[in-house]
Length: 279
Image (cartoon, rainbow, N blue to C red; front, top):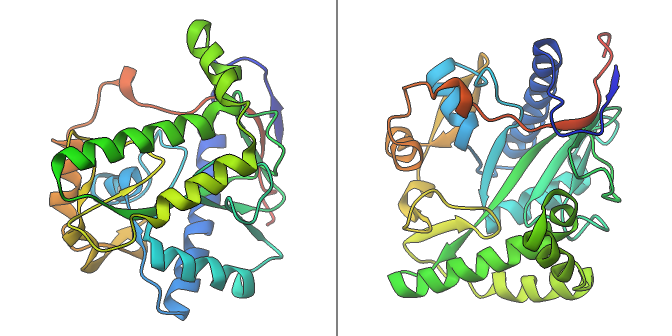
């Protein structure tokens, strides 16, 4: 099935959304298979973990899935994907492996699908249905240094986003993104690689470097990344944090209360191709 729309107010039908979710579930199962086979730890997180606890699966209006790895875990998973990923069905993307890729974390995508979010039509890499593979690095223990670190993270995030931002933004913001987009991709990635290597020694805080953190702490307590449990998600057991309640309260507050309908976020898409029902 293919649908195209060049405006930002096209949203998937409930049937399309559920088909996307089931494809993402398939991708989560592939992550789990590789990680369990090769003793790699991961954590379903963010809205995926919230959905597991509150809905026993996907949040009904959610259109993505999130997995978190510490940097060392991610590098092991990345190498395992190179050899053991089912390449007949899936492909892996990140800055190191994919020309034109502008995110500071990886994605696992399903072949024979298409899922293009609005204002990303001009990106030069394949854009199948995906799950996000976030990389968590250590952040400074000193509060002031963590604020400075967060500002650097913000700048890198905006620089990476600039190629999409120059299409999506308006006015002065659009002009700023156009300027940021003049930074050569190779230069930006090289400088970012140096930046992330500075934050590998263990501290008491972790965060994904190119994704916003939910509070003024600009990070999460690293101790939550040290212990593991499992949780049911769509009837399948996946790895996650042991401190599920603490993590969800930290990130969402009163996480069991449904948000009002006008705050139930879903990403506008411009192109979508779903798997055939027989696959």
